[in-house]
Length: 67
Image (cartoon, rainbow, N blue to C red):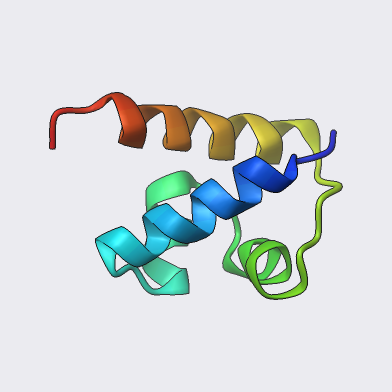
């Protein structure tokens, strides 16, 4: 599956808003930190379906929660 530019931007933005390290983001999303590093630092878009779903679910949770 392929992450959209908006999904990657939202992931970077939310990481910054929450001031999360790559390791903390990996723990929160359940996605390997090396995979996250390539997505965030190298704008990798093509990922496995389970990675796509984990990141998408985490983003939805972040934007719909009342935190």
